[in-house]
Image: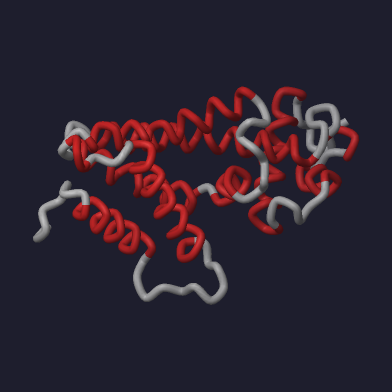
Length: 205
């Protein structure tokens, strides 16, 4: 029986929340299911009524992260409209904001080794989230002459890689990688240079 009076419906979520705390503190491989149970205030046996193992628990944390991430990306994209440029830039900022606000989810999604192909639900959530950035790239690339237009998938992958790099190196306190500039400024200026190179921003902007 749960020690803190959890009902069956929210015990599963209590275990996910416990895993997020542990992922943030110790990394995705730095804790056991027994520790997750203890963090949630339940017996170890209770975990196995909801999850087959630690990877199953982390996969659920990643799924919930992609759901939140997708909502944030869609909101950012919608907020930037009707300007395709503003909408695209907003999705890059949303990536950084998500990593700052939801570090446990971020690690579960991108650093745990859990494949997004693990379940159809996880794949769908991840595809929706990253699809927003690709959609923004498709719209923005229409402003580039066809003979100079990179594939939107490449366009969005470049910005994703830049966003991810800024998060990993400068926004999460990695040892030895302190920057003299705020991560937000690094990302914004990097995206600006990239878009200027594609002719989407005037040289003097």
